[in-house]
Image 1 (cartoon, rainbow, N blue to C red):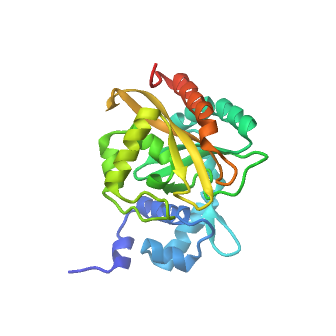
Image 2 (cartoon, rainbow, N blue to C red):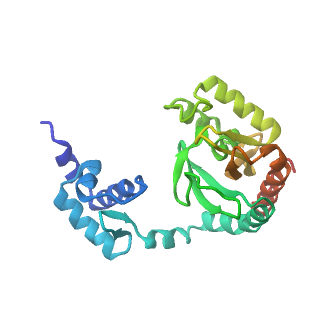
Length: 262
């Protein structure tokens, strides 16, 4: 006997349903209304309302004028993740130095599947609006951070990216898997990755991987994060920031463990 999507959703455990709701809200840049949340999760509106009310009570969600948004308690919990906390603590002094030197956006991100999650972002006197934000996700294939990390990740991570959809976000986005692999080869040689307006028209960046020694990564090294400086294409000249970004990434690598190119 076939069951409906609503019935399938309702048969999930309470924990699964709570996570479905949180993930659905997290995927939206703004608030998500009750009806839309029910549609995205496949749960009944009454179920979504009841569970969302519990999540609001525990500050996992907040109720806005239109719908639901993520709550501050999720951010507070995230600060206690040991790996994330150590990475941010090690990186922040060097990110601050880059911010002072450039006045542009300085970002720290990690790879999660085929996407980059931004875990820190500093803005300065010259910073312009960009689509990234702490906790936000962007496709790895069209970001400097994503390419920098993938260049020093397991082949399986690269395979996941190139075997999935790689739609063109701008006219300069690399969408051909073979060309993308060649781009990663070049990044391994230079240690630097570039976003040439590939994710957002008018925005460019230069990035470098933060790596530690590993028995599973390429040549015994594994990227754990990426560091980038981002700014407007009409002003930012990535070539002038190569040495600063490479040096900062190397210093953070040393702070975490054994760096690439030791």
